[in-house]
Structures are given as structure tokens and as C-alpha cells.
Length: 128
Length: 128
DNA sequence: CGCCGGCGCTTCGGAATCCGAAGCGCTCAT
DNA sequence: ATGAGCGCTTCGGATTCCGAAGCGCCGGCG
Image (cartoon, each protein chain N blue to C red):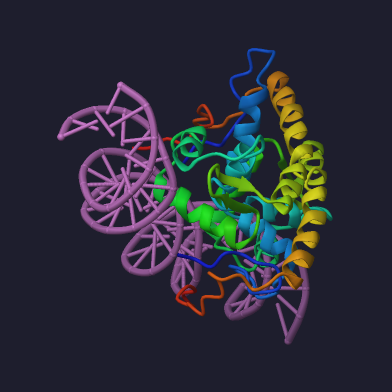
């Protein structure tokens, strides 16, 4: 397992350790953004969280949760499961503009020509 | 190659949830956030952009650029190379709060205790 | 002209990561 | 005591990423 990106220490692909790069690395891992988003309304148990994330694989979910705990975005509440810490909630809120942007994005693509995207599927990953 | 995440088939109307998922998928791919960030100050050529991204692999860079073009965040200026579209710039700006958060994050971790599970001298990553 | 050196981009084999079904030990309600 | 749900782990195979190498195409430059 790779090291959890942290500000002030080496980041994958970089030695600068700048906190922004660490953040971009952390959130640039598959499912990380999604997990933080799905925890926005309060704690969720492991299996429920997994279901909310389109049934992502349990092994990767475990890995992400560990990373997010080390990064102090997520904590475990003994009786409620995984929850965002105040820092995590703060991060989640900083995603709001991105949410709003995604709607502008959808609107923009709605009236623009479909472009020659060879496959341009449904936006979900294809397997096999 | 995988399909580029796109907001749900626009039937006009509430693609609300879907467009966000598409955005989280798009930005949850390795290097995507970073690339958008590195283009913030204007167009960059392929190789220069690659250098800015800590020498990420050219094949993946090409793949990401194609995805970002399909998603209309990036366009090619015949004489200047890759550039953010207005939509792309909009997306980039929506990342600002995240940048600010990352600094709070760094500050928080600076005086917080080193955390039990962590430090992991475990340096078995990094090929070379 | 001939020869760099840089460019955008592609190929390809091997490494890292992700996936998902299966299963373990546990608790709780039936 | 049986079943169902839980958090979590394992592991083989699929996918993705990496990075060195190289292609064709310029624009200098001697």
C-alpha cells in the first residue's frame, strides 16, 4: 500500500511536499472524492458506505478509509461507523463549488455537439 | 481505453446527481486535478506540461488530455499547445477553496500529534 | 545541405493498482 | 441454533499506470 499523501512530506511523483500537491494526490485517487462526498450527511457503516459508492470493492474502500483516517479527514465513531472529522467536513465544503460547476458542465455539454468521442459511454467505467 | 466521464445523457432537466458523479469520476483519475491546476496560468505544450507534472508518464498524459478535451475542459491552440477552455477555467476556479483547505490541513497536521498508525518508515514504494 | 535538438505523440513490457467474490469472526434478532 | 448483517481480509485476475524507447516533424545552425 502506498503512503497516504500528507502535507510536508514527499508526495507521490514529487518531492516538494507542498500541501496542495499532497491534496491533489490524495483526492486524485480513485473513490476518495466520492467517499468524502457520501459521508456528507453523517456517519455511515462500512457496508452501507460501500453500497453508496456504487458497490466499490471492499479492499479498496478499506484502503481509502485508512488513508483518510491517517490524513485526519475521517474518524471512526464506535457506534455509528465512519464519519468526517471537522477537518473532513471543511474539505467536503470546499467541494461545493465543484458540485455547482458540474451542473454548469452538464448544461454546457447538453447543447454542445456530442463531439467525436469515439465511445463516449455513459460515464461509468466499463469492465471487460 | 476507458470512456471519458460525462454528465448523464442530457434529457434536459435534472441531471443533478449524475453530473456530480461524472465529475467525481473524471477528477478522481490520477493526474487529472494536477493537469488542470498546472494549466491555470495559460497554455502549455505537451512536453512542458509533462515536466510540470513531475514527469508523469507521457502515455497517461496523452490519455488524460484526450479525456479533458472530450469533456471540453481543455482545447488545443494551434500555436500554443494545450489550454483550458472557459469551462475548464471555471472548473479550475472551483478548485480554489480546495487549495485554501489544503493549507488549513497542513496547519492542522503540523501541531497535531503524529498519529499512532502512521509514520511507516515503510518505504517500499517508488520504483526508479 | 547535414546534423542536431526539441516537439507531439505512440508503443510496449512490466509494475502498481483495482476489482470482486469468497470467507472469517462477531453480534443481534428470530 | 439459525440466519442475517456487520467490519474486514484474502487472493487471483483484470485494469491502469509507468517509463524508456522511438517515430515523424520541424526550426535552427554551421
